[in-house]
Length: 80
Image 1 (cartoon, rainbow, N blue to C red):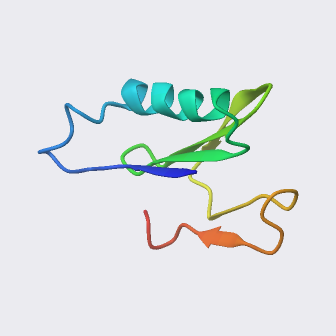
Image 2: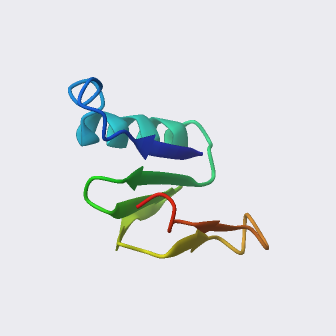
């Protein structure tokens, strides 16, 4: 699951970071195996996995998960 926090002024109130974080945790609680919450505003990525504390990456260049997405790399250069 990939969620991208919008930078849009129109959606800012409805897409507050905490709301999105709660949504990602709900996905994990319902058996999603991996979630990436990408916060373009702060240039952070929150990585969600079952039974593991949320990992926070500051300004990563790319995302990958060799266990679940072998060979897949998400290049974040166009996102930032």
